Structure formats: structure tokens, C-alpha cells
Length: 160
Image (tube, rainbow, N blue to C red; front, side):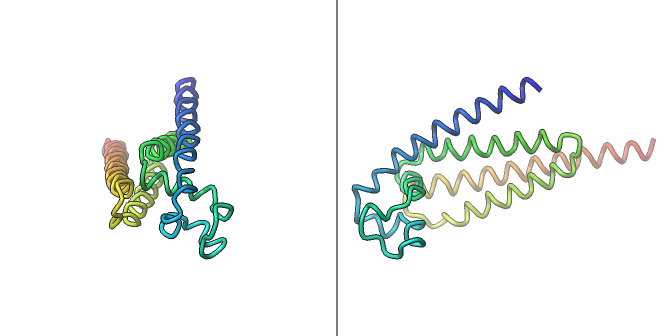
């Protein structure tokens, strides 16, 4: 249990640090009005066409950072994904089939993330495409391995 809290603390620290760094890097959108049309999806939902810096949502800072400086947003995503898997494992460690469903659902979400940025011309879009695809495949692989381990153990218990 101590090891769980150590991992949790480290992952949260990485998540917080990378979140602040991403937000800071993404503030560059305020200086690039030609990018407002393409990198402010949250502000466009709230205000329509963005005309000045006061209309730019804080969430759009993350979009801009993910598109053009993806290092810290990627660390943010990796640490968030690690946290989800760690917490999911802790919740379902005695219920392996539920953990398999959890990993499968997570894989589906990662595949959707990957699909959303598949045609992105930016370096960040490409990075997030490959990250989502690879992470989704790893989650599905883990789910399949755990499923067959549980099934094999159950068959052995039934047969003797």
C-alpha cells in the first residue's frame, strides 16, 4: 500500500508540473492572432469568432501547446494515464475481469483520441496520434493477457 501512495505522489507531481508548464507554453497563443482561428476550439464554442485576447479560454492554452510544443502536454497525458491505470488497478485488483473492462474502455478512449488527430498537420498532432494508438494497443494487450490469465486459472480450478 505504501508503494501505491509513492507512485500516486510521483504521478501527481509530474501531472501538476507538466500542467503548469503546458499552460505557460500555451500562453503563446495570445501573441499569435493568426492562429486563433485554428487553435481556440473552446473559445469559439463560448464566444464564436475570437476577436481579442480576453476571449481566449485558458483551455485553449493547452490546445496551442499540444499542437506546437507537445513535450509537456505529452508528459501531462502520460502521467494522467498512469494515474488512471494505477487507480483502476487499485480499485479492481481483486476483480480482474472488471480491470479488463476498465483497460478496454481506456483503450477505446485512447483510440478515439488518436482518431481525432490522425490528419493533423502539426508535430503535436502527430505525436498525440502515435501516443494514442500505441497506448491503446498496450491497454488492449494488457487486457487480453489478464483476461486469458483469469480464464486459464478458472479452467484449472474447475478441472481440478
